[in-house]
Amino acid sequence: MLKRIDQYIFVLAVFLLAPHSVLAQESANMGTVVAIIGQPILHRDGQVSVIAKGDALREGDELHTAEQTSLYLRTFDKGFIAVRPNSVLFIEKYHAGSQGSQFKLQLKSGLMRSVTGQEVQKDKDKYRLNTPVAAIGLRGTDFVVFTDDHATQVAVQKGGVVIEPFSKVCSVEMGGPCQGANSRELFASTAHMLEVIRGQAVPVQKDSSPVLQKELRNELPKDVSKEAPKDAPKVAGLGAEQTQINTADLSNARVVANSNSVIDGSLATKPGVIKPVETPPSPTPAPLPEVPVPPVVVVPTEPLPPAVIEPTIHWGRWQTLASLPATANFSDVYKEGQEVVSAGIYYVMSRDKSDVRYGPELGAVNFQMAKHDGIIVNTLSNAVSATTAKESSLQINFAAQSFNTHLLLSAAGRDIPLNVKGAIESNGLFLNGAVSEAQLRGIVSGKDAGEAAYVYYLPTGNNEVLSGGTYWLRKK
Image 1: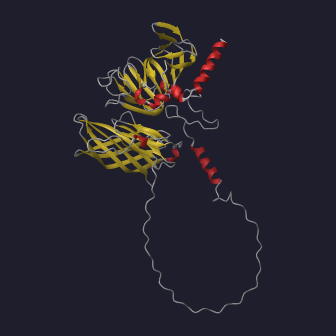
Image 2: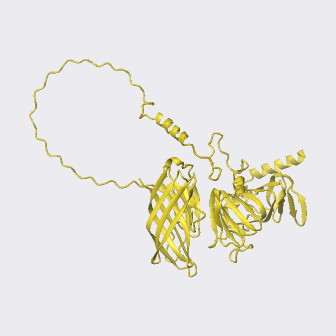
Image 3: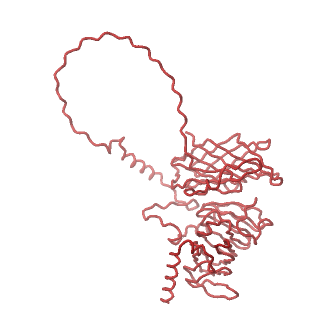
């Protein structure tokens, strides 16, 4: 037993110290089992065996977990997969190299959590996770899936996913994500999930199930997610069990901050006592003659230009449609130092990385729209034309963790209203509620919530789709 442990430690050390070029090479082994609970079963080449810690897994393997049995897998590109009790996961393809990358898994039943590895991150368009009813593609790194033969549910801890029910245009045999008209995206939100029921044409966003929420709350191994400093505060995610922010603590914090300012004198040095110097009285000078004072001429000053805000939110339409040129490049929106907010069929959005949290002390904040870009697409003829926003409003109530927006869009000679309500999370991300026909995803930015933006997607009937993006500034 000790010999086996020594061998495993040696192999793991070599794996962790391997350079990136080694990790990216083609390998028969897709990963290594780093921990087990109970006795998971491996189906390989018609043989059945018990999986042990340290075992290497490869393409073609099928993993089975029974009651109170779990398996934890480290992929060759430093990814992580947890297979929970009563689950079946089939490793169809998982390799990278000079001949091309392929990452295709099949969760036949049960619950799994996945943190994608380096090679998958580089080639997201090569990744596919099939369930019995839908295809799941990647927008980010950390997500959890539950499925049976009837339905699939997906929730996201970090990054995002795109999911689409199987159809003629999204088949089981295909690789990579399905991104047709029936696909829907979900980005990091412990409060929400996407659900696909067999026979359902479009995924539906709902409040996240307790099973998915519990799985997302489970801590990952320290080498999978960056370990927070010991003194770092824990931030509660949104959901039924969200920890409320204590407004009394916020008030106390403001008092402490004010006590350390020079304004109240607490940091100013106390001057010493200076004795006045007695001087003899000086003689009274002779009166000067009066000099006429010229009238004061007031020169009007030009008003100062408004302060220019350097945007921290980046968005636009990433592809040219008909005669409408693209308004954003992927390389600009998704460059280093920015976090993905939305990656849709037509519009993309990111925000400069920020650790600012938005609490109830901000109250209700109104925004004024500074920019809009929109299109209407006929899905039969592929005709595309631009839209304009004749009316616009956005209010975010941080105390109630909600938002409300209205647009009156002028499109193809008629006016179409867009009215969406939804929830906002403490990190500034907001998205539509489940009852809305529109898909809306937005973000707030700046310490005082000075900026906001969102992209929207709305099927209007008559084989038409409205899509666009907006950028807002906080009203003073």
